[in-house]
Image (cartoon, rainbow, N blue to C red; front, side):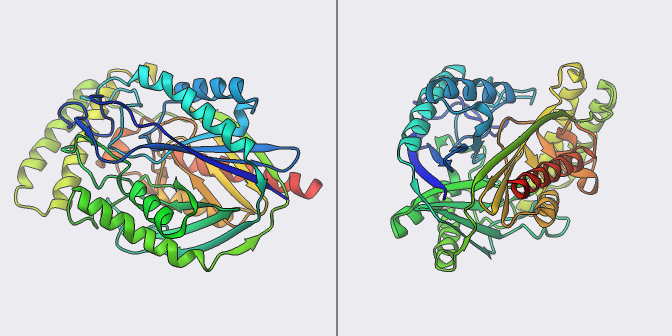
Length: 420
């Protein structure tokens, strides 16, 4: 029988503080609309343990994530490879992700240093509260929130919703960029995932985590009616209502133990254009954006992000030799269910591939976990003119390699389970 414990701790920064998510944002945070939290689910089966800490942050670099896990391990005794740090990917939190994106401020090192203490205390407290916990699951759909923002058709995971109820802790698994709030917003917020959790806590009284999925190409761009806090509440509660209806349909899944397998491997880099070629591409996208005057908001935003991707590619052209190509992947078995952690923005079709071919049901992709390598569109989703493909330093097949490695680790867990 699995044992689980849950704790949440506030990690809201003081203001003013630099914000992450948008290079176009002008100035630091001026206020706090709703608090940010780290929420920890700690599991053990008597022999093995695993802790999932989900932070209301944009993401963490691989080195920052590894340093944080080492600090937490020293404080709690949990092995670093048995601790997953994941982010909801809100674009209205502090700047915690360093990189080469033009116009993006440097990360908030002082905030990151304090973060280790908050997360360590939360993990320790969650471990101390572990009690026997059955595992239940339900799958459904919710329309009108998540859609393929590249206007290239739909994905089976656009709108797909999984719930995993571990004891009295509910994991909401959904894939969608939390970008209801745009670059004009300068108030700290967890965006719609925070509104969803607040709704469930208020209505059902359950402990709750929002687990961000393979959301590389999924967002609210084509579904939102505005970019204010009223829309955050509307979409958050829309998802919350779907969760509330689905909770009653959860059914038990096997809870026979816990296991973790992980690997870090190098991703192949793509042929990055020369600085001159990159500048020409930027100029072409600027001309295209000028011609988009009068277009609807969704298509205009697509053109704007394509230009932003070209600007990132121009920056890549100047620092290709310093790109971190290491990609840490983990697979975690929780009874008959499984999680796969991916350090970046895996496209939804690749997430679907992993889930459909996994030997465990359900299998949930945990995005923005263990670091950040950027976008992983895969060969089928690679479009050199798009924001995501321009912004990634990796070859088109990199996303496919991530999916295959995830499946290899899942099948390793299956073999170990059969040998027990």
